[in-house]
Length: 234
Image 1 (cartoon, rainbow, N blue to C red):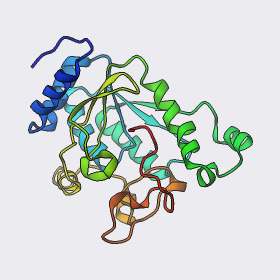
Image 2 (cartoon, rainbow, N blue to C red):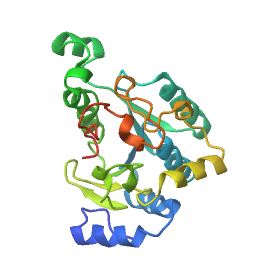
Image 3 (cartoon, one colour):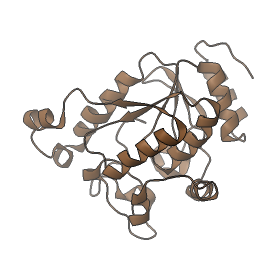
Image 4 (cartoon, one colour):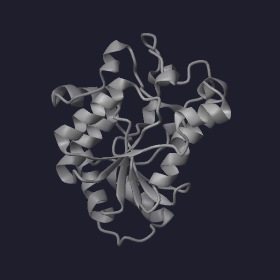
């Protein structure tokens, strides 16, 4: 299936999504690379799902830019994994930072903004930097799963992202958490060691907690807040 590199219609996107629904991750990525390179990009915080997608993508197009939102609040373990993956696969990691440093943010908005107004903090440190990083790209690969949260339950393998006016590709949309970890274990892939310490979904250190046994994997994000997303995937 080969569609010229122009804006796809809603019908074409739905057709593509249905076509790739039962296809493997590699097939989805091969199509994306052929269709959109050099205006193709991936985002990742190097969570378990991201590692799976990167393992596939590195075999097909290892120099595809991978945007890493360096918020200033990342866990040291996340940065260590980033460096480990970059060395293992020869990744083209693009570290995107907010216009305001953490110190400048504290001066303007006060310290611990993430406690008082987590939406604003996410907007400054993640949403706005991503807006800048995605400019000039036609397609965006993300490692989302439908069963991660209610906000992701209806994502397509291929979909139109109106906010950024580009095609969004979710090759793991139909995967389960167990399938992700089965793949990591089977292929002996590196992963964030915080998962071994009771974390199930890893974001910025101040807003990420360990989860209780049997609790939903994203219950440790923004603990005590009615918040499921940082905003970059909405």
